[in-house]
Image 1 (cartoon, protein in one colour):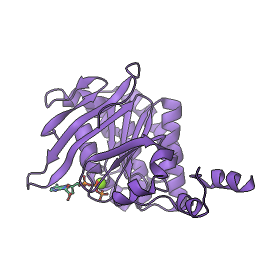
Image 2 (cartoon, helix red, strand yellow):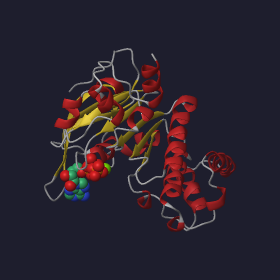
Image 3 (cartoon, protein in one colour):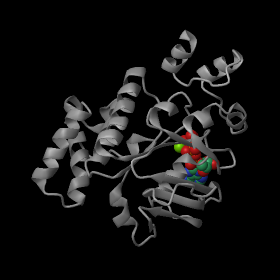
Length: 277
Ligand SMILES: Nc1ncnc2c1ncn2[C@@H]1O[C@H](COP(=O)(O)OP(=O)(O)OP(=O)(O)O)[C@@H](O)[C@H]1O
Ligand SMILES: [Mg+2]
């Protein structure tokens, strides 16, 4: 799969046929390609073990591809420039425990700006804003390991945003979250994209939340390749494609297909409007 965007689009992230094998010989990803415009919202959807997290680590320069390349705003990522290019990228790991390592949440939020020599006053201002935005006041002085899963994820995202990245990579943003935390987090991510023009790339195996996080989807299959790309509607209504890659269509799509609808709704609102007609 090659980059299909128009030449005029400002491409924030491009991976071209990247492959990676872990030191023990396991293939992490195989010839994976994605291309994301600046300001876009894209979901990488795939079953467990299909290489979603590995691909994000390649995009962030934490891993170097065996073959293929990654470009950030048109500049090819190498071992030498990874540190500099990564300033554009905020990467929230699948497991927030891997990201919060300070004695308190406040120290974790202060860590990133301090690393980049951002003046103390400016850093404190940013942290105040993020604490409010992510409702973290009550946990600010707590050690991160005493936070709930959802709070940890919010704190991890806030820590990443404290360095003002232009691109946000979030691995499985809503895993293990209750409905309210899930909805709040999805709204935050969409707010950051809409108001702060942050390019948003998320991974998930949850077809139900994908329409809320993206306008475009890349599907990764069990063979660890990017096997398809298209609009949310195209990807999530293609039952054959989803099933062939260890996924299934959202509940609403399966129900409306059974009812004989050609143009299946994806959300409750769309379903309601289709049924009211
Ligand atoms: N550190 C590692 N060493 C060896 N193999 C690994 C390592 N990390 C991941 N893998 C393997 O790489 C492949 C891709 O894993 P990855 O974690 O990227 O998948 P994923 O799509 O993110 O899965 P999940 O939905 O479970 O998070 C899998 O076969 C996995 O077993
Ligand atoms: Mg993963």
